Picture 1 (cartoon, helix red, strand yellow):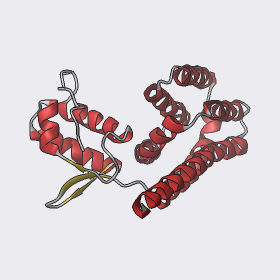
Picture 2 (cartoon, rainbow, N blue to C red):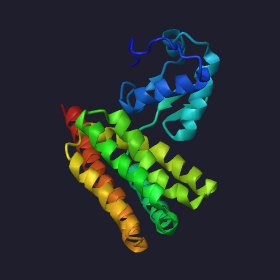
Picture 3 (tube, helix red, strand yellow):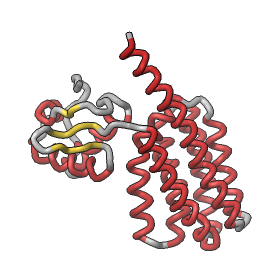
Length: 234
């Protein structure tokens, strides 16, 4: 349930709906709002000190991201996480992002490589200080910076949509994993393949990077299901 965890919104430089959406998204990713939980929109409006209009707009955007489901006459609910959904999502990402990096490699230049190298350093600093929010933002920036070399807005839009849906799982993974160095090494390996202009190797390393995360999440979700089964048996 929603506790007193939402402070009033004060920053007027962005639209209210965008700020509300950001707050709710963070609560979902951190599981302050639990999977399957009904979102009390009236309470949210009261805690954030906004009207219902930006709350409703934020809910529609979060539904488009795949984080919320809106049911007629019942309200908005945090999406349930499931192994099958996660497997389908990461399978799709592997197909699309593998091809994206394959075609992006020949278009990358030294400016790209310098920026990507700086991002890998910044990601290490973020995990060293346990700043998961910064790491996740940099991680997305690292991969999309490679794909952006294709200058294909349609492709980037599809990838961004899949990444939005993946955040629910990725955020969870980064909070519980202690193998940050393996993740950083995978980024280094992807960058090395790009630098060497080896399209096939870059593609394979990108797919492996996605697949290894998928397998780790698979184990986590199976563990959760086992715990839920134990709880119901008691």
